[in-house]
Length: 112
Length: 115
Image 1: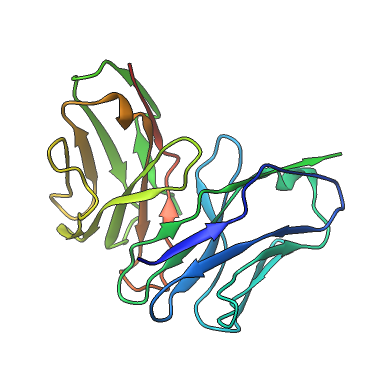
Image 2: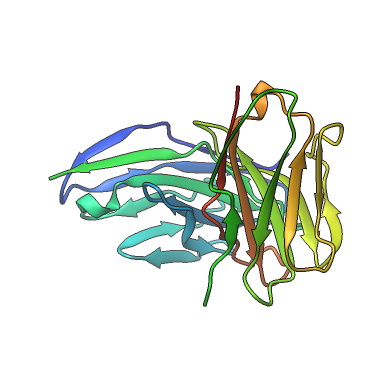
């Protein structure tokens, strides 16, 4: 069935370092792709999304491009901050229903 | 705009007991979801409602889990009897409609511990 696989964590970076969290997907058809973030003690929040191939989602300095040829949706940020410390989830929504499939999550810790 | 509300935030019960969780979605959202998030894993969809009808409950363990959304607004999820492996965070989410491009908005979750 449709699924996503994201890189395992935890990831620890220093402030202002570059971030990439890999996410690849398996799907029939053309799913929508999402990145959700969960800050400590809070619920899941949508970070960005892309609904078709070559779309780029962006928010709060984070970007991800929907790449059909490599079935990927990697999350990137050029300069992370301590406040970016959270768990990041890649997810897809199949094109024939709204059954969101989540990856296992990647914990990011940014140190000053 | 108020977000998705859930209660209680935490619950500790013994195995074989029953427990219920409540969710109030964002006003006007037709679609409501219940997810189970086991520690270290991503959320897994249990059931999806469109207004007061069930759209997808294929991953709901129906021998012990039940859910309802009688008036198409609030929803309750019940576990009876609970097992140790039910320890997880139960997340409620809502979206305006069912389209695959719709954003799902999540509540803070209910953390359940079964002893």
